[in-house]
Image (cartoon, rainbow, N blue to C red; front, top):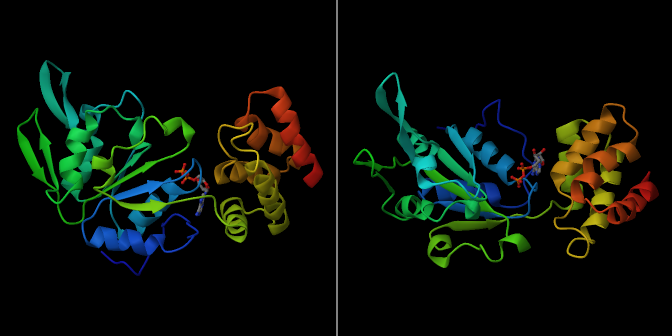
Length: 264
Ligand code: ADP
């Protein structure tokens, strides 16, 4: 495993600060990591980048309100009259000494904390009740979780007993030049288009909380850049990739489109 020689297929990631260093030190010291930040700001990409950089297998789980501990750990499946045990993604990551990334972890059912807590503290064990196995995580195993501390999670916030098991990183939308570099890197668009899209995003982000549930993410800007690069008119591309993804309210959409029209 090499820390300093990235693999050729390491996904592009534009760092914001010392997050790569924090991740590497957490991993070396067998500490789990919590990444908090708005949707589409690069959390998943960062974890994919780090897994490739460290040469570790990555199991990503998009958590939702029906996700149970069994979905993570595994279950018995019945086929051909036989019952076969099938590892879930968390168990696979533990067995292989890889990274298990639980995206939007606060969405998952409460029973998942029962399997996450003993893995996230210094015990680093995964008890599999249904098979009676007790797996000890190898040194290279790492648990990474993320959540969006936006308003919809205020009630669902993470319990202190859970969050205090993690080293934490705060992510936010990238600074102007960095976001422009991301758009160019991701879409191959011209720097001038990247500049304009980022300026639109800044104007739209000031509207968050007033009219919009979520701010315009870097992901949406990448979509717009891809459409324009493919020959689409920028105003049409911004409506489809940014504005209509942000709101269902026609009046709010019109207001957002004014920002777009003023830019192109
Ligand atoms: P999150 O997990 O925070 O919701 P993602 O990691 O999926 O967001 O990021 C969404 C998209 O935005 C990525 O697919 C990528 O195109 C782009 N992106 C965001 N931040 C970065 C970054 N720092 N470096 C490279 N691409 C980024």
